Image (cartoon, rainbow, N blue to C red; front, side, top):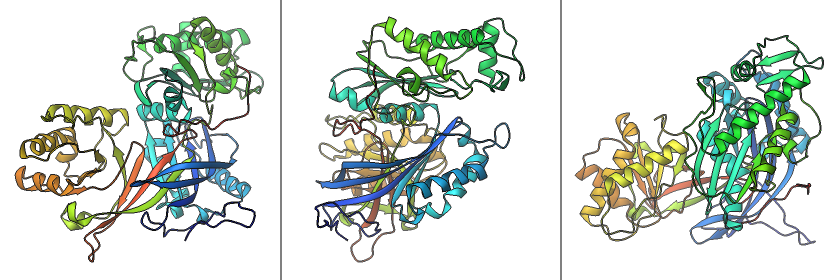
Length: 510
């Protein structure tokens, strides 16, 4: 079904599952982005236009036509999210957006913090069961959440546009995530136990929520706090100041502590170079840039003031993010292509279909005559760690931008490197999935099976152009052509590093 033009020249959007790369040069999808975290949850609905560029579609337009309210994530108990209350909120947002769930073409469900825990993830997944085939579900730990915030805030795109090294600091309710972006890539990350909702109070300033990290910050000031205690304005500001000090210590590559307790959730920030610009995202960013004036019974406003004061003294140029509290995905694009059957390898055939396989795109040194297996292995392990995919819970698809000849020695070193990088998945007998842009998919698959005698299921396909934050479905082989249909789902952020354009919010004074 083509995209038609109305009599006034405006685009007529549609929902359709029959779009293929072979038939259309332009498609439009109705997409939803759902972000459910420990502190807040929200939705965003978008229309995303994609146009064909060589062998794949690229996003050329995005129209976010509805943003939900920000919900303080409801809890039924200390660690259990109230799925019924969350479901009612989601239903109201669909109604307010005037969108029927059946109209959604694609989308992304992002779970962070306590939402990732198995019981919560299962209950939340049930809320979207009817759309299970259309949504990419992502459980983000500290590393992936940090990377996604850097993309969602626009820091990655800004590093290209401004030709600058950009640090993004995402300060939320329970944690702060720090990412350094350079040349359109996230080059260094860390995360720290600092957030606005480590201590929450009611209208009478009585403490109604007290996280362990909040208790430690108080103890560092000589305060013994308990639920029901009254928190004075002076003590609240002192707590915010202490958090801001430790945050800036982490931003400079240090290892902030409270007594003997380390606050870092990841390794210290390894970046030691110059930082040209700094952006802030997350809920506290709304206060840093003056976009929010209200109070939600937490330390957000005070923490924002303390951070802003230290930024001004730091001397690094402060830039507004594309998004503050909504610095996450706005949905996903989705389209179908087909892979040539003459250069692929699938064994056994019963391995297919595979659904929602995350794509990793490690920096593979394939342009040299000699391929080093150890370098391939280490590059894969580094990406798996950065994207929180180290646990072998399922297969991943390794994007292979093959360059050079496919001699036995080069293929052998490459395949040994892949097997080493995916060692934990090989040990669990998970499928080894490779997706390339050249025509060596069949040779790679044959080498794994015949030369290395790898017993795992192998799916080696090519003719694709994939990137980080893509997810693929690989269908069963088509008898007539020997091809396999591939559905490519790409997470879409408010900004596009490819286009170097920002999705602007209302101007605000810096």
